[in-house]
Amino acid sequence: MRTSKMKISLALVSCVLLVCVVNAEDAVVEEVTDSSSEKAASAIEKVQYVSPEPDGDVYLAEHFDNPEAIGTKWVKSQAKKEGTDESLAKYDGLWAIEPASKEPIPGDLGLVMKSKAKHAAISALLEKPFHFTDKPLIVQYDVTLQNGQECGGAYLKLLQYDKEMRLSQFTDKTPYTIMFGPDKCGNDHKLHFIFQHKNPKNESFEEKHAKKPSTKLDEYFSDKKPHLYRLQVYPDNTFDVSVDYKIINKGSLLEDMVPPVNPPSEIDDPEDRMPSDWDEREKIPDPAAVKPEDWDEDAPEQVIDENAVKPSGWLEDEEIMIPDPTAVMPDDWDEEMDGTWEAPLIENPACESAPGCGKWTPPMMPNPEFKGKWRAPLIDNPNYRGKWRPKKIPNPEYYFDPNPFHMSSIGAVGIEVWSMSDNILFDNVIVTDEKDVADQWAAATFDIKRELVDSDGIPWQEKIRKWLNRKENTIMMYLVWMSLPITLYVWYLRNRLVEEKKAQAAAAAAKKSDALTPDDEAIEAEADVEGSGEEEQEEMEAEEEETAPLIEEKVVADADKSSSPRRRKSRKE
Image (cartoon, rainbow, N blue to C red; front, side, top):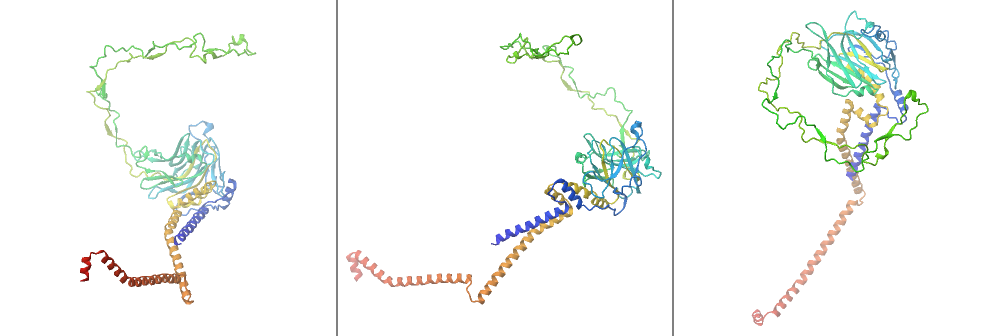
């Protein structure tokens, strides 16, 4: 009885838990059973988007929800690209501020590059310059390749601070501090992190590229979904790059850049030359070896098989190819102009059932006498001195920069790209030094649009998994599961207490009414059975006492009859 109730309790608690999970999942994404278009419309209606305001220290926070941002805050380049044909040199790519082409959220706009195969450049000043001192640099934005990407980039450039900077003259030659973002051409998928390092000896700048990540990047260029790109560079000279909150690349500015930030302290002497008597050959032909007398270098590799026999049925008089007897000269064929007409050749049908046609020749076979060109065997070179290397000398260009984090200050953010795909949407650019600020900004912008895109057509199991991936939701579910055994035990104790109270109440009622309870009846029945058993035992004992003397006399009489007269006489005496 109690086991059954325990099972029922477990089932009830499991149902309650499942309802909690489903309700939580529904709170994150809309579960709709109608057509995909109705799903999207219903989900969009439920989205409450408000242009965010950053809460914290920011250098730039742009959500592009103001249609007038181009021309006021963001300036299109009017310059020309150097070293390019005049027809291609202009930065004449079109820019627009508009909603996403698929499932747009009311009020949410983005900066869209509208042109294909054109140079496009646009930039905006920071609210205040970012100086690399004791705070990290965090750059974050999201990109939607609405038509995919064939060849081109969607990266940002953080331009060097210059009081006299003219954004209208922004080109590929404009000095920048950091370049960050996705880039692709063909099957080469990249996620750039490049910074300009200043040589402390001659003050020249050189690009330093982060090593290519091992994670596959092709999905970000082909799925046509918004993706959140974030770069974090720290004062301890480390960095990490993430996409959709997942770290794709991380490392050290001192160890994981190509070419290295600090050059080697020693280099090969460019003036050093290998001595003329230096022998680098580890093995040499044995000078004492002699070619064997029977070695024939001129013997062919293959010879005619003299034992071969022409197959039976071979048709030597038939040609392999014959003119097509059904072919007819075209009516417009002019032999004076086109030459003598000849029917096209076809395979000879007579050869189909024969082993072969035409002149038969014996096949070739490997020559058993073939040995090839003779070469002396190799032996260890007694004069071998190893591989020669030039000597090392101090590097005249050597320097050591212990803090490459101290880069040139940043004054503006720019987008300067060329792409074979159009309608690239940039959105929600933020430059800050606080991770919490970047997280809040992404939660108020990117997370909303990504959840809307992901909710369309994704199975409810996947939605639950995504919901559980959130830290706070995982903690809540962990607490629920941990409390499950306690809940079941409390439920069991409650049921047991209820049953005991019911039994006590029934017993009290039975005593009050002098009525026999089922338990009392059972006790009386057991007592009756025990009483009847005792009476039977007493009767058996009385019968045994009465018959005992009679049995004894009979035993003595039988013994006298079987004994001898002498023994009977002695017994009488």
